[in-house]
Image 1: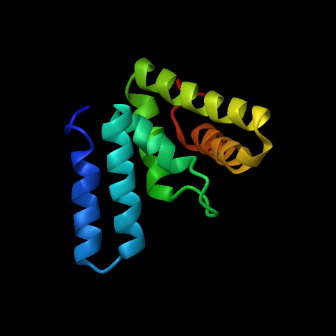
Image 2: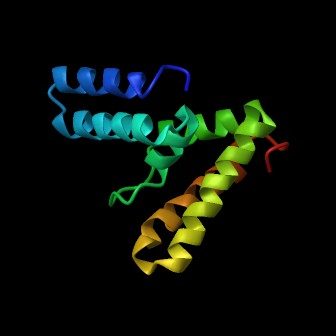
Length: 120
């Protein structure tokens, strides 16, 4: 992990808390704890955020970051596709996780439309 055990997410949580956005502060703090506890990479945390079970779609900034990172290296592209296939497979086994699979498909659609031709 580049900023050590979810440090960026905790910084984002603090900034959200200071600005009065408690929901965002809670989300960033919980992602930071999850990143530290599960030893997730920053990219895996971004993918987790994009394909969460929350009742809203992935944020445009998150989708843009995923597309940008997919273009950066084959390793990051493989990491993205591994998370996406895992989300879809999880939904196949547990129908209650349909939202995560749907959001995974939204990420794939965004990559097809906005990533470089090398990714597609």
